[in-house]
Amino acid sequence: MDIFGRLRSGLALIIHNKRRLLVSLSILVVAIVAGALIWHSRAGAKLAFSTAVIKRGDLTATINSTGTIEPVEVIDVGAQVAGLIRSFGVDMNGKRVDYGSVIDEGTVLARIDDSVYAADLALNQAQLEKDKAGLLSAAASLEQAKAKLAVDEANWKRAEALLGRKLMAQADFEAAKAARDTSVANVSMGQAALAQAKASVVIAQALVAKAQRNLAFCTIKSPVRGVIIDRRVNIGQTVVASLNAPSLFLIAKDLTRMQIWVAVNEADVGRIVPGGPVDFTCDAFPGREFKAKVGKVRLNATMTQNVVMYTVEVDTENPGNVLMPYLTANVHFIVGQESNALLAPNAALRWSPSSPGEVLPSARSAKAADPAPGVPGPANGGTGTERTGTLWVKDGAYVRPVSVKLGISDGTETAITADAALEGQEVVTGEVTAAAQSEARSPFMPQVIRR
Image 1 (cartoon, one colour):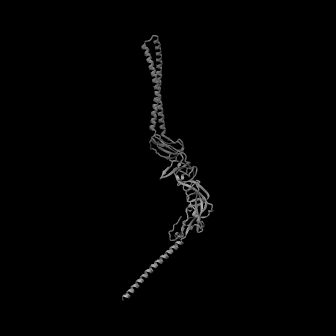
Image 2: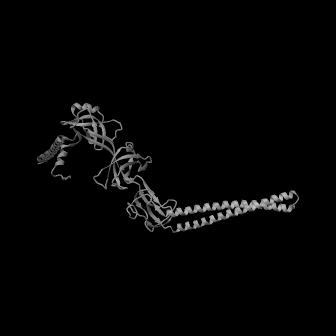
Image 3: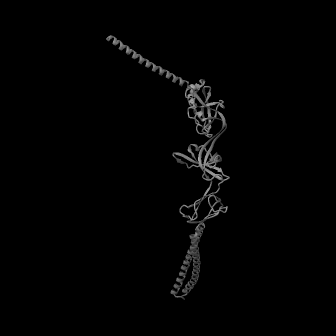
C-alpha cells in the first residue's frame, strides 16, 4: 500500500508540473506573437511628406505697427485774463463756434465778461488825464521860476555894480544875491517837478495801454485759419488765468495733411528710412488702404517693458478730410519688394530630415557635409547681407537638398535664388506617418467643418 500511494503522489506531481509548463509556454507564445505584430505594424508605418510647390510671385517685406493720426500743426488757444465766458462767436458758415467749425484768422471765438477790465481802463484813463494836467502845471511853474530867476539875476548884477561904487549897503547886496540864488534853486526844483510829471504821464499811458490790452483779451480771436478740433469751455464757465494759460480751443491749421505717430521697436527702426513708402489702414474704413511716406524718425526714444521704442512720423495727404484726427492706424512700412521672384515657404526652409534613410542615397554624403538649413529671419529690406538656406526637394520616396540664397521675407514666404531649376518643384515642409494620416481620415474621428 505504501508503494502504490507513493506512485500515485509522484504521478500527480508530474501532471501538475506539466500543466504549469504548458501555461508558461502559452504565455510566451502569445507575447512573441504580439511583439511580432507590433513590430510589423511599426515597420509598415511609412513616413509621408507634406510638400509645397515652389512658384513665382510678388513679395513685399514690411514692418508692421500701429500709430495715431495727428494733425500736422495744432494751435492751442488759451485765455490771458480771468473771467466768465459770456458768449461764443460765429464761424464762416454763420453758426456758433463749436466742434468742427471752420474759422478764419481773426474770427471771434469767445467773449469773457469785461466789466472789471473796462472799469480798470476808465480808472487808468482818468489817472492819465490827471497826470497830463500835472505835467502842464509843472511846466507852468518852471516858466514862473525861470522868469523870477531872470529878475533876480538882473537885480543882483545891478547890486554888484552899485556895491563897487559904494552906492549900496552890504546888506542890500547880500539880500539881492540870496534872492538870485533862491531863484536858481527854484528853477532846478521846477525842472525836477516837470520831469516827474512827464514820468507820471508815461506810467499812466502804460497803465492805460495795459488796461486796453486786458480789455481786448476779453475777446478771444483765432490766430490762424483752420478747423476747431476741440472746444474745452462752455458759456457760464469761469476761466482762471494762472502761470499756464488755460486752454479753451484746439485748432488744426490744415486737415488736408496729416501725420501718423508710430512707435517702432529698436530692432526694426534701422530699416526705416525717410521718404520710404508706407501703407496703412484704419478700422473706421474697413477694406480701404491709404498711401503715405516716412517723414522722420524722432531721436527721443522711450522704454516700455525694457523695450526701446522710437516714434516715426509718417506723412500722408488727406484731400477729402476723410481721415479724422486721433484715429488708430495699422501701419505697414514697406522695406523691400521683389517682383516675379521664386518664393519658398518658410516652413520648408526650417525643415530637415529626421533620419538619413529619408535622403536620396546619392545625396547622403552631401547632406553630411552640408550645414544646417537656414531659418529665414526678418526681412532685411536690402541691407546687403547675404543669407543662405537649404530646401529639401522631394525625389520619389526620398528627398535631396538644394542650397539657395535667401532674399526678403514677409514672415510666411521668402524670396530665393538658386543655381538649380526649382520653379514647380515640390519641397518638403513637414512629415507625418501613414498611420497618423489614416487616423486623421478615420470616419470615427470627430469631423471639423472649415469655412
